[in-house]
Length: 285
Ligand SMILES: NC(=O)c1ccc[n+]([C@@H]2O[C@H](COP(=O)([O-])OP(=O)(O)OC[C@H]3O[C@@H](n4cnc5c(N)ncnc54)[C@H](OP(=O)(O)O)[C@@H]3O)[C@@H](O)[C@H]2O)c1
Image (cartoon, rainbow, N blue to C red; front, side, top):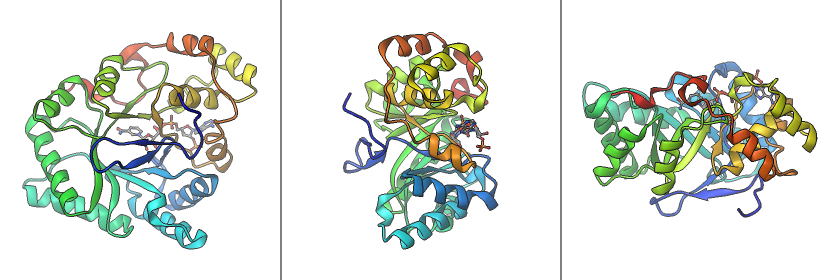
């Protein structure tokens, strides 16, 4: 593994070698009136990848923060990678496309977003196909650069791959207690980048004695241990915080490295589906 930095990126499949920053910033449950401030803090800290969704109801605030930061720092819009997601298809393909275009309009960053994901596989085989086709149309219009999926299990991903399609990204819950090894292996085999949501498990294992011991050894905190584990597994962690000090510490991950023994201890914590903290639809029809 080459040395990771806050500037590290992964090259995504297809879509003309798009680079995605390896550390992302999540905004789920960030109230709209706080999101702008948090995203601004994240950009000032050095994050260059923001993860939103229609469901989070803060797409416009994300776009506003990115625009303001670009203007203030004379940066290019291209320096920031912005993702959003759609959950359900509408009645008709045209209506679904209108919903996708509306997200792009709300985010309002030079008329395009970097990545659009199918948020969950829960709309069934026909719904997933409908959403995928709409995303491809949006891409052909130049309103999104790269497209992918989220919460897709082996069956859902297999369906796409069998149809000759490969999403650039699969965003799933990933941390030591929920490692989802079958879908991780399938994604790795096909070069699909894994984005890790709930990378610090919403704080649920903040008192884990092994994690605290590893943290003490490296003079970091428990959340940095979990984020570093995610980076060293080759995932793209998306920590969320509305607390400025945490936004900063969650990006301060490059001055230490977990050793083999640390990784083995954390790898040993997998509890399968029981270890998930979010509703996990990877097994749905
Ligand atoms: N695709 C999907 O279905 C899906 C599902 C869930 C999440 N996601 C994405 O993944 C992102 C991350 O997941 P998540 O927000 O559910 O969980 P998370 O990032 O594991 O945890 C966020 C929680 O931990 C707290 N926190 C953050 N940094 C901390 C630190 N250093 N020390 C102590 N507490 C800390 C935050 O509180 P404060 O904000 O108060 O600091 C917040 O309550 C989301 O924001 C979203 O972008 C996607």
